Image (cartoon, rainbow, N blue to C red; front, top):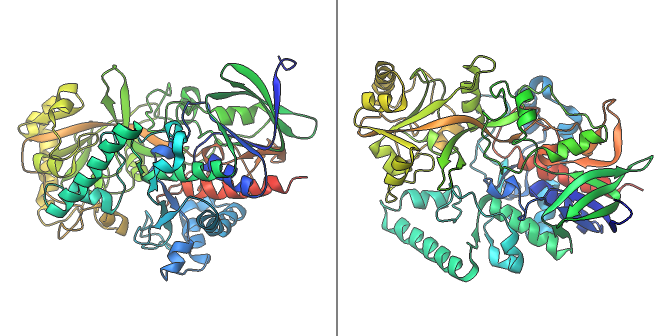
Length: 567
């Protein structure tokens, strides 16, 4: 096979085209390396292109410019308290020291720009070392037309989250959409956005007002193309190649033709973890005995390729994290072809007037907590080997104001989702309970107890609205508690929640230089892992939004420098 294969030479080979892979490639190209990026799908961008595009980067330049200056001891203390036994001082220091430099590099040298998250609080406001803002950045909106013909190869926004394929950014953008039936200025704003989008569809066949993770990937890709990085799509890696000393490249299949790529500086694994590797999930996820019970919101082609490639050359896969994935509540949205889209519930749970109940009709969590904490609470209620489900419950006022999962708020219609079986409806709470298979009395008691306190803006059972993160997730205009309102204006609605994730935390063991380690904790020369292919520096914890992309792009920046320093 090798004799007939063509050999391609480069300095650095990156496998995977999400934010971490592309960030490695762009950094390496600026260091003077010839870089090839391989992507097995026909589009580039990976899970990152569907993400919110947020990065957790304490002490970042945008915060400093706004006067938010903190010593490295602040985020170090927070992580020490959050990670507990998983706190790895060397790796955490490498992240915290390099993250601001990484942002500075991309701002100054590339097409990727950022907006600040200076009012975005850490998830756990009661943990010592947490702050009210200044540790987050998000990709700035990006004009997709700047990608030219390469725009066609960019993974488009997740359809069930977008509006007619148009991404909507967090913050002011989504606020205008929520207020479009309540304010003339918001209505005009949304009208302009939508008209521009339809013009784009006619002119370009897709939207060009890129936001969130789509903007992040587009900015990275433009920067990569500007430095002559080759992004080869529809390329599957068959094996890693090595000599007696080092990993030397990979054997790949590109459009059905076998080729050998020789990489003098090494190979970087950036394939997005294992959210759709059923076999590994069945071993790692107690609630998913066959793996299929877990429904990740990541692209379905994230099947653990990078981790298997690493293991094939002796890399060590971490099995000991307290949580092997970043959990998220996911609903299954029926598609016309009989398949289901996976909708991650990240926004509406914090708004006032919604609760989540388990199969017994009882609340089990603070609904306004982070997606990881909320789903972790549900998983803890289930015996080992049992897959728990939940229901999000709201009234008519709520669903028309905020929507519910894939159901968009007014003026978008509800009927399609009711007909498809995604959305359930009941004239009364008892009717709704019957519709979703919950004991009516139990659900009525739960709603009644919740409402009694919600009238006063209180939630003594779960403390909803008690932390800064809760309150930011709520409705700032709703008093006295932005997260709590009664559920009383029928008809009533429900959507079923399944255990899911945004991505995985367990990956290949690496050192602080992003070099992959073997079973003896020794470096495998020439092999690096970034993003979700490396074990998260957060060690199975989720202290803040952006703790995947922030460390992902930081260790990408580190990996490129590590590779460049190889002889």
